[in-house]
Length: 336
Ligand code: FES
Ligand SMILES: [Fe+2]
Image (tube, rainbow, N blue to C red):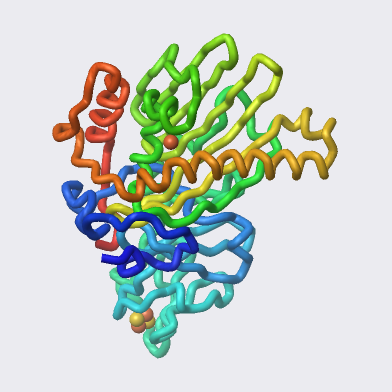
């Protein structure tokens, strides 16, 4: 089965075909998804006055900005007859359905039905908690966020300059790629990191904290909601690397991946704009190298779940992560 048969155009290079359809993958979760913050698009791709559709949680959402710029993420299918509201238009700060012109406000309520005085209570769409941060538009899978938006370890956002990047749609669930954070063997074998083993691996409800320490480097990595990683590495020669990476939950077996690279603001100010852009490009290239090393493996992998994997002693951190992921709260999207 060709990948393109069940994938929207991703612009990604061809990889070995998956042995089974994306729809089969992850079906043990029964239509539920991790309750976490998902970066669903680059903020710069969301102009004022436009409504944009995104595949999310096995269904679709619309994304737009309120008049003050605050992003809104709502279920995309009109409660009337199911038209995709992303094919509609923004009219006076409201989304107008393309089919019969019902209008919906930023709180999801229908505000106007042509030639009708009364608006029934069922005439509403659902709101996902939404935010703009780190150059991305985020949506939380749940009624209320269970935790704050991801931060970089050891430094505040205002002390960084950063560049967000859209890697693209991937035929793999995001949490599998993010499990690299505790797959220390993989960091060594595939990415050639000589000293990956951790000093600390600590789980809390929605966050995983990892510290790696060697003579050459100290790295703090955090994983937010099983899928979004943020990291700060300090090397013996003074080099610092900041990055974030992860993706949104598009559908069973699919994720849309994003990352960002960052520099300490004080360092960037010394370097000047041109050198900063050059440095960003170098760091983006490094991230792309890591992605390219992983993708042929991840896109053809058939992961059979925690209980069916032959985990060994060296995989104890992976085993722990897989149990954590299994127990992590999940929820079906609002409109299914
Ligand atoms: S389907 Fe949206 S108004 Fe009829
Ligand atoms: Fe990797």
